[in-house]
Length: 451
Image 1 (cartoon, rainbow, N blue to C red):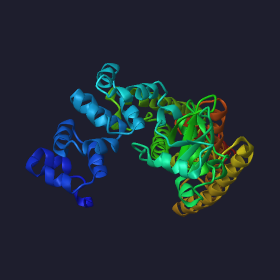
Image 2: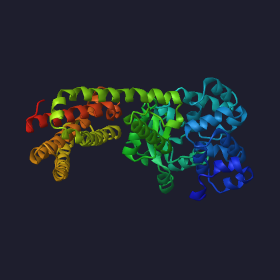
Image 3: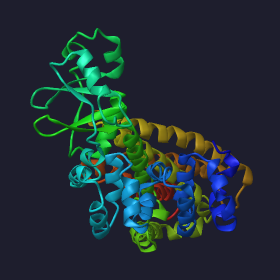
């Protein structure tokens, strides 16, 4: 196992001290090498891969990001690429091949062993973001009429077991999934017992077109390490294992975070410059027009600002605190929707809770800011009315922000629009406009200004 201090040296060694590269690789396991290859320049990557040797390459490639692994497969010799890929699990092979250009894909498939091509080509027909695209057809199944001893022999006589073998699935004579048992149960029960007596029939399964996010939700909700995939007749086609689910959870969480920031759906270094530009521009333009809308909305208070210019000093506080509360509320709702913690029965209580929180936070924050402002003393305005405006303005702004932040994602979800976009210009603009309008509206009343 390599020490943390060495984890950032491999690329430098490959370029500056190539004679020491083999020694450096010996101190790192395959996961650590894969993590460094993910962030290396292409030239350094090629040097490291060459120094790795044939035996370690498949395992290293398996632990790399899909985009990085596909980039390597796309540029090395076809025979070498096919040889590396054939050492991987079928689902990992498919994941990488789905990233390639069609011409390169056909070139590699023509070099696969004939017995592997049919299964790989079938997996490639499924959408990568579905259970079919995630599953591996390599399962362990036995007939329901078999005994425990026969089931164990079936497992032992497998030429090559999948890496992730946790469950033994039970099928009927038509290959329909009827139950599941575990290896632990099989080795601890009477060998003469029928499998149907030790299997569990209340099992959860998915179909090939089930969305990957729903698959991940099922695995995490039911605390299973793999979930079977069946066709429309209930026949067992494969399984989605927990290692793929972890990748899905990371991918979905990353996508939601980036969408909420208006930065696209993928990490910057996996996108081209043009793709990143096109992903960000609409949101920034939306934010710019949102700011313009705020300016237009506040133009009616130009005379009030001229009369009591000190109000302008606290505009950033009112807008900023409202924006923070709106982002917090929308983030909680968006994530709750994504992981299934928020359902339609909870909508009213959730919005009420967020609005109440916003109001209470506004009271505490408003009193604190007002107390600080009162000690400064401003010419041309009495302290008590100013305290009332600041306190009331922050309470109103933060209460409105909480309601908007919680409500917009729910509305978008009802309209079947990804609610992750809610923390972009929608929430920001609405919170700024409504919060500042409330602030100045309150000021015109309490300070008896023109408005």
